[in-house]
Image (cartoon, rainbow, N blue to C red; front, side):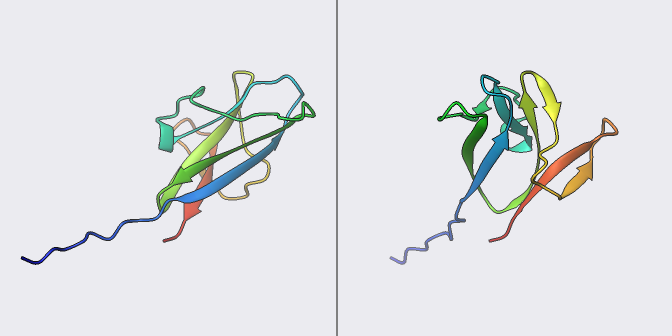
Length: 97
């Protein structure tokens, strides 16, 4: 009997490093989490306003925005953008295989 193994796609770590006021609530929302504005929370471990976190994503193209204290923001560290159906911009992450 022969056994075939399906090729697995390797997820890649995408790191976020965002500056916001200490004490803020900072999250990342995008098509990778159904635009859930509270699901992926970033942490400010030192209390200095540097919020960090990571996502493990399959190869592909993803749109996202930051949610800081309930307000949607662009990621100033990401230059890749696309217009969304609201007439504003979303940031874009492109992950190659």
